[in-house]
Image 1 (cartoon, rainbow, N blue to C red):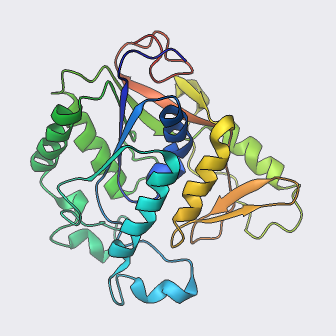
Image 2 (cartoon, one colour):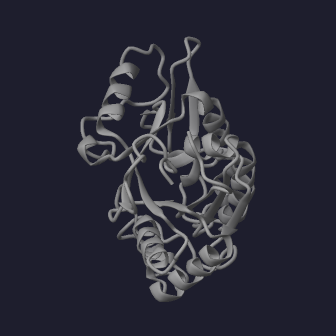
Length: 281
């Protein structure tokens, strides 16, 4: 991996835990290589479903304290991954988790997906002007799986990056169909798996022909697992005695953890970017 002087990578994610689920290995890899890795999180994740029974009263429908709890989870994950600079878009709690499409939380007056796009983009643009990343990562136009906050994070990122002179490349984090299907098939042979295997088509995937960049995370996989485990309310990580590893969200569906993370180049020169977000810069 050949990096230019003072390389800077900024990632824009919708909720705490998204940074670890979608890009945790990438963050760990580049941080270990000396890249300044910066993270912007758009909401506190107040509407998340809670896995541990002992913490259920934090939920939005009860004490509504989950967002504050997840600040601590994200802090631990960032420390594990090597994030050098973390910011909440507009400050902690400025915009609220909108929940999944079609739920009552969509109408909350501070719901991120219903907020003023121009204001949100200007807020992110100010961050870009301050830290001047060469590479920015967020989601594709569908948000990866249709979550309103992921879609809005995409819109905000693309609008802000369009006005940022220093951003040389913009990537969308995606999941590989081939890697996901291969990982699920391997899990079918694992005894005593504590989660349900996904049905065909149940996990969101991207056709591999669209993937432009594959970042190996084999050497930092343990770091990604440590970050995932920091998000206790949202993620359950399991590893067999033989080393097979997967995770599940509150739905209890087993999801494989490939030894690479995958991206679609959305803006910038593709030369050299096949296995390195900074390749050729």
